[in-house]
Image 1 (tube, rainbow, N blue to C red):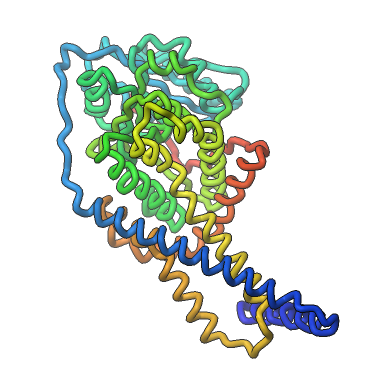
Image 2: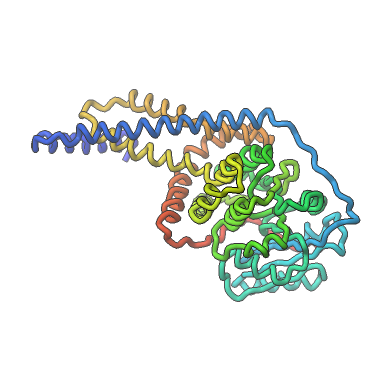
Length: 444
């Protein structure tokens, strides 16, 4: 069915409703239309307010001055345990190899690979690699109990470092990464966790990777950079360092959480602990390149974030030791999910308003005019996306990003809302293992 055919079909339903309404002599559709139309316009103005916020946030970030990192005396380097959780991902060896090359005292760190693989071939290769490098230890589990946070907690029992550095298996840290991410924890004993900035190895592979990367850039180049101005931040699950003492005292990672990073960040907020974000320290990873993988990832993230806020929001909002500003900043991780919800609601109530309206000849010009106006009124996220690409030195991909937003992005929005609804209804969520198109062979 063509687009015009769909609109015509909806109009026919509209006319059928009106015929029924007139035949039965009841004014049902008039008040229904007034109600749906009112809700629709309230949602439009809410989206407009959100758009204005995104514009203001983007301008603030454009005017943001670069910050300098503070060094520390390498003679005082603390012992660090690097954890790389993995499940059937041989690419974890690439990450481990790069960690072996850190320009950090070699006697001051070790590497644990948490192997939850059910593929014996992968497990064998991990063991063979560890046999060649005494600094690397494989911690194998028979079951993937508790998903990634369960894996991390299992590795904690074998972690001797006072600081825990965590990488997802596809991340590629530079040689100076370890000493730079550890510095805030050494220089300030009140800091509990540090998050580095993400960038992406496969950004321009296709429309899916451009969209997935842009989502990450908005988080890092806008949201976290803004929060840093107020000495605040969030953990993102990889390229992050936490003080082991604080992690243990606060009950470790929440086993089974879909976003253990956000959940632990909210616990840190409740205890008024410091989280430092370093916008000048980049670490590259890989984003999903298949549409279904992106949908599943974003659905899981939405589920995990909303679940975490359901559990901790009251503890933050009614916390007597937190300032109002810190409480507002504590809501930032969930803030990005407002627009996807608004988009779905705008579509739903716009459709209901259209169906219950008085029958009239199909006017495509008016339809496209109204649609264009509503898109413009809710364009703040697109503007923020362009600014985030500019900050990532990838502004030339803006048109492809916009095209991906109105194609792959629309379906992604559906799955994000699906994750939110599942979290609200406390439905179970599966941890999906994403595809990685990386062939890797051990170098040394």
